[in-house]
Image 1 (cartoon, protein in one colour):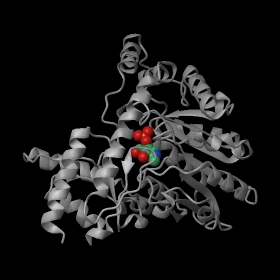
Image 2 (cartoon, rainbow, N blue to C red; image 1 turned 135 degrees about the vertical axis):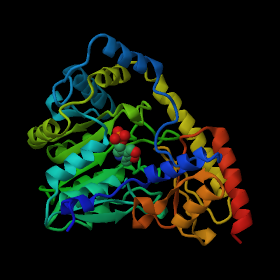
Image 3 (cartoon, rainbow, N blue to C red; image 1 turned 90 degrees about the vertical axis):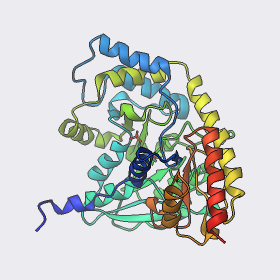
Image 4 (cartoon, helix red, strand yellow; image 1 turned 180 degrees about the vertical axis):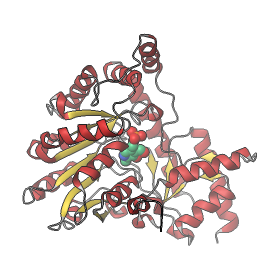
Amino acid sequence: MSLLAHRASQLGTETAFTVLQRAGELTAEGRDIINLGIGQPDFPTPPHIVEAGIKALRDGHHGYTPSGGILPLKEAVAVSIHHHTKAKIPTHRIQILPGGKVVIFFAAMLCGEDGGEIIYPDPGFPIYKSAVNFSGATPAPYPLREANDFAFSADDVLSRITPKTRLIIVNSPANPTGGVTPRVEFEKLVAGLRGHPNIMVMSDEIYDRLTFDGQETTSLLEFEEIHDRLIILNGWSKTYAMTGWRLGYAVWPEHMVEAADRLAVNIHSCVNAAAQQAAMAALNGPQDCVADMRLAFQRRAALLEAGLNALPGFTCRKPAGAFYAFPNITGTGMTSHDLQTALLEDAGVALISGTSFGDEGEGYLRFSCANSDEAIEQALSRISTWLGDNVK
Ligand code: PLP
């Protein structure tokens, strides 16, 4: 008999961390590894934000804060939400959390249970499926199709609804595909949900500031008619290069606020006090750092798209947002996992197999733009040489 509860075996993981670890081991052995597997901005947190964090520590922000976050930070989030979506969200529905990721787990725990079903994207962020399984609910994946530029199709989502459906998860701009779903699909989704008033929706908008070439993002907050069953996941990790600060926020519908607060009190009490001050500086300070990072990702995404399309056996759609390219590698005749392993071990380039993001990811690799132009060019050249030597 296992010493662990059954539910412990239900947890999945993020292969990105495993690849990162192997890349680290190879580097420690003296190998020169280029890391395009990484899912975090390669930029440091902008200095004015770092200074605000340091000042907060010096000023004595050392204690617990209210579990859902300090009021001025929640006010800053509300202002930012209004600026970007026109939605007016009262601060008590905003919860500051230690990372956007936490919202996924909270949503799954609060909506999912044995006998229920949760609908989520495949390929998608692997924590969706993991959290759904842990909650006891049955995972119900919907495909993101290359032919659709990896936007979700509202019809695909809606067709997976059954009487057991509790929650639908959407993500745009998306990890791992770089796909951005056009507004018309969001409109269709909202219209289709009119017939299903008891189904909750979680919109993962963590990459909402990162789109390329003027591509517009749509927030489900723009659709007031579903505010009473909408959960928003967002945060600072990607927009302000703050992954290690562990900061994120949720917007909860009124009826979930108390339960979400209880979960926070039970699990982490509150978010690091100084980090919350830094988060305030990020939202209230100059935003040109966001634009600069976005432009760098856009330039690198274009570099990757061109370079990947020139590789034998690869084809790559234009990434529209987030900071990933998701080329189709079926022309190489290799599986995604075998190609990921060979390129890391033999060519010294760390990438993530599409299957790390679900079964629909077979035939694809995820390339991150979170490395320098030079590193991207060198990685492409190494892959080209390796393919030339090994794939006929
Ligand atoms: N949602 C998606 C789609 C992500 O890619 C990530 C991070 O990679 C997160 C959520 C979690 O972000 P955080 O680092 O703020 O927990």
